[in-house]
Length: 67
Image (cartoon, rainbow, N blue to C red; front, side):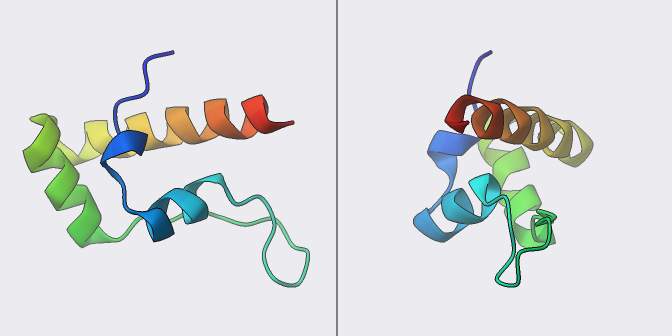
């Protein structure tokens, strides 16, 4: 698995991306902000949809790797 997006994220976004549970113990759903998707699409040259799919793939990979 090639990690493309994760190194481009700031500290807060990285922590949110690998978070598994919310403050109250419920499953955490990661929803990147639109501004982040636009910045990453410009930085990587991919479309916003492609960036979102890549984020989802990397998140699943990173969460699985932590366990």
